[in-house]
Image (cartoon, rainbow, N blue to C red; front, side):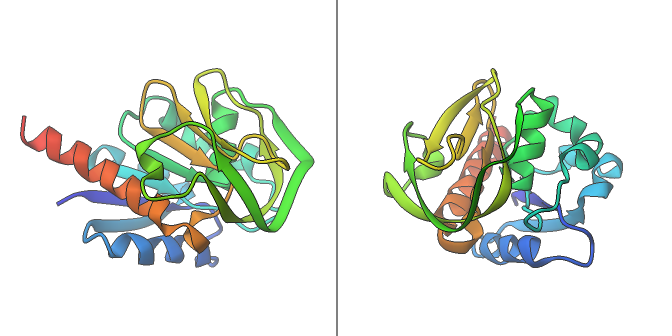
Length: 196
């Protein structure tokens, strides 16, 4: 069975972001485990077929604090989906500029998909998403832009050479298909690995 890890990027007593992801992933009938971000360095991440990095409360400036717990992401080859805080930390590790309070969004906003990808299966090219961020990031050199908006340029990106996705918005609110598509990417890769 496919094993997915959800990393809670909020403090241990704040689980609303991670719990929402757990509920969505449960519908895919995969084995799911959830840990706090500080437990990443002591967790055997290789046993999982994919990892989802949750968001955190708006206004919580976590990038510099969280980055040491996520250095593994540079060498990790399996699928990863970073959401909001996960987007910022991943970008930071790959050389993004952190834009503090320059592209803030809070509420419902429209984004546009500008590059097709399996993670967007069954999603419209323009969609309403939930935003809760003060900070944003520039596009790192190793990534390609997948989605954008008039308010915030880097809404979603993917690494050029591996299945590492991150998004600025919170798909656990309105865009569950994106998370389900990510789970399918993990399942497909896991199945191919076991049938070789």
